[in-house]
Length: 149
View 1 (tube, one colour):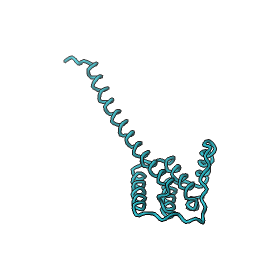
View 2 (cartoon, helix red, strand yellow):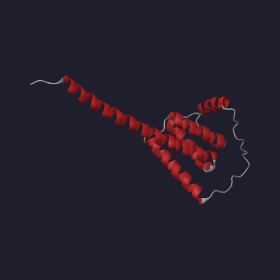
View 3 (cartoon, helix red, strand yellow):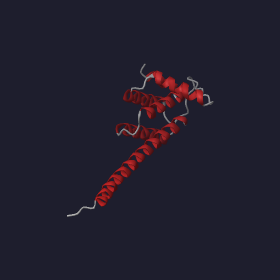
View 4 (cartoon, one colour):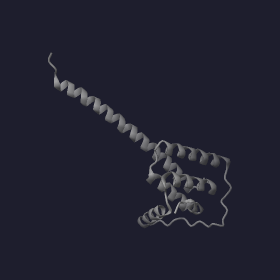
């Protein structure tokens, strides 16, 4: 029996290419899901959709899960604000935030549940979590006390 080695090599390479393409698109899909979630969370933080309690809850959850400490956030803020000439919003601690509508509460709960699921599925890595915590600290300064030292 005569074997054509080029056909066998072609079939092997074809199987390898199929596996590599599948893995590539699965990884790309996971990265897009994580990016969409982080972007939605950051936009919601900028619009003050979350209450202070919810922001503190998210900060506490992410800091415990990823072992995010206060010096890491301070370093990220220093780097971010040194390269971008935008000053952080000054938030007066004594002002009362406007009363939230019922839809905003539901949105914030849904985003938090999606964040928990994404963390459980390893969609969000340390850097993504740290950027979320940094954004929370910028818009909700009281949440900083929930970071580990």
